Image 1: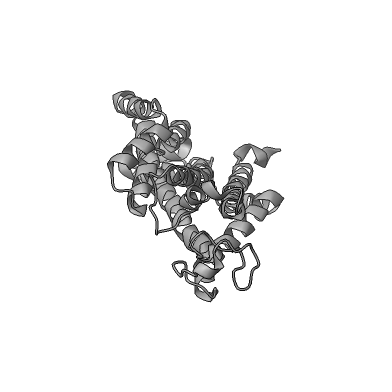
Image 2 (image 1 turned 120 degrees about the vertical axis):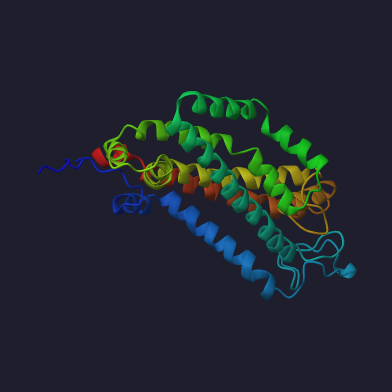
Amino acid sequence: MTTAAVPSAKPYRWWHSRAVRRFCRHKLALTGMAMITLLTLACIIGPHVLPYDMLYIDLRARFSPPMTGDHYLGTDPLGRDIAARLLNAGRISLLVGFSAMLLSTLMGALVGVIAGYRGGLVGAALMRFTDAFLAFPSIFLVLALAALLKPTPEMITIIIALTHWMEVARIVEAEVRSLREREFVQAGRMLGLSSSHIMFREVLPNAMGPIIVAASLTVARAILLEAYVSFLGYGIQPPLPSWGNMLNGAQQYLAQAPWLAIVPGVTITIAVTSFNFIGDGLRDALDVRSDHM
């Protein structure tokens, strides 16, 4: 009695130790990871240890510059503490960024893996549907939806996710097409595994490398987009703070109190740059070709 030969080529696993070591050697990626960790911890813990609440108004301290008494980053036109508002705004902006990333990645991965594995008419239809969404400039689509719908944090998250899943779908579809004829997929078919099992239990885990890289960059784009939409007045609405509407409220006081714009602007820059550094590090660490270099 003979048994079927087991394919010798093993599927690529994105989590193997060499990828971790390569990521740890990427100094900018580690710097970005450290900055995002510190920023997230500051947004979670900071509001509980600061002496002022984000809604506390002290009219006598209006336009106080940074490092004035207990107002470490100064105050705004109403005398509210900027540090407290900045960290509470960070909770919302980061939560919107991470949540939009998760939703858009799930949507894009689902469309991409089905289109890439099925191919044929189904794959072509899904990719043309994706192309139709890509044909619309995302910023105008976001502004139109935000103007029509109530701009709560949850709604802004959904709007950003609905307009940013297409890039992930394109990446996943291309990766799955390259994997569907690999030996481990053929072995699964020979064993009688269902298409859904092969797609989501065999192929998708081996396509996670590009998905993770795309997801890290999507967080940065989501944070920027939320800030942009809120800056234009269509996003998160006061008194609920976000980095974008803090910039919106600061624009008429640039000459009188420039720190009102500098503080949230620098914070947005740090967050977006850090996520881009992390994305670069992940891309280099998960590059299969680097195993043979």
